Image (cartoon, rainbow, N blue to C red; front, side, top):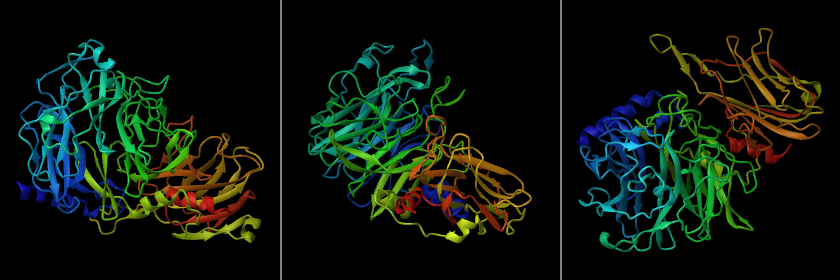
Length: 615
């Protein structure tokens, strides 16, 4: 079995060897074996140097019979994996959604849902039923004292205190609904774990949900599982819900600890923004939930109904996975995400932000950087979620799953390093700088236009002469000062007589718009409405990223996210667009004060650094 799994991994990696070298492309990750369905591939580093991964898997789809929890070990940071070890059998009641806690003396606990009573259907609040039964039952754990090779034969139940949402469910609390995706953490000699309580099943599957926690004062040292104690938090009988006026969904809570012992919790809603709260007393009480913002009092973070996780990093900073758009739930949805418009859509690409602590009158809080695209798949319909973060030997790795394939990805050092350094970066990027206009060219309103890279071309090595995606891109870095916000003002125009080239103009909504034309097709995207201000010098970086085929605008150091007008601040363009090269000379507007053209897609952090560096 072990050799067979290693062969599967080798073949999968070999199949992806011809993929583009962009490390953000999903296919370039290292595959984690599964039985078919693959969910929540979470990892801890064991005391013998291995990576231990726990996963929910099965031969059917999510929620089908046979779904169970398994573990496996990797001695080489996810390049190869040993045999799959089931914590629960595939022919037993459903076991799902495990998270791992490693205590100081090396024992590893796995906490998960278990359908111990073998319930075969659950009632919806609208009098219907679901046959999917993986989010109810009993919350249990098993443990391993040999670094995940074997697990305790007995499972142990975690006593969870009843909340109002339990008492008022369709079973009057006699049956409870819940699950967990949040990583446990150790705080001041205790372990704090997360639980997502469900008050009602119905529209969107989980129709009402809220966050709870349980704390163990002795799990870090007590070796007798029968003597472990657990306290359900927060105090009272309500968990973390949405802010006042928000929807009924508040789930998949993720927690990190701050240097003063405070806890920060972020979680998903169906409102278009994630919610967050702080606790200053170890989880007993929390600040009133608020929609997460980039900084206290700053603009909100946009995010759909998907996992959004925050992680502590060894350098004292934080990383945060989210999807950077304001998707909301519309219409009914079946248990497996079928029918109508799914509230779980648009999990591609995944974005990453870095966080740092700041002092406020309310205590320590987190300020977040501008985001970068972390991972993407060429097919926009494919979703990725339920990540975990691993730090090893100075490198950062992230796991994710598309529900059928789980992978490990090394985060490019330049990407993560740029995020951590973004708060202070004030240097002009020089990477693949093709052209910088001088004062004479700006005054003349014309400059030589460098050749931009090809986005794709014919693959002359292939038998059928198919297209080859080069995943190339470029960036325009502009300083400008507009006298008015009239729409249609030309800023830069490199089009030839046939219309091929690039065009940057103002829009009637007070933004810049980029148009690309390769002679066969066009693409266009604009920055956020109202981003431009008349009479003020401003900085704009327009990036065409040929990996995920996405156009972004960074205005005065802030990545456009769509604001209140659009779900998305970033836009896609056709993967068959060839190259927007046009005339040899570009026309420049008098409003331009500086122009740089890069032969690569600048990272957001580089765009922020260019802004901070000034004109």
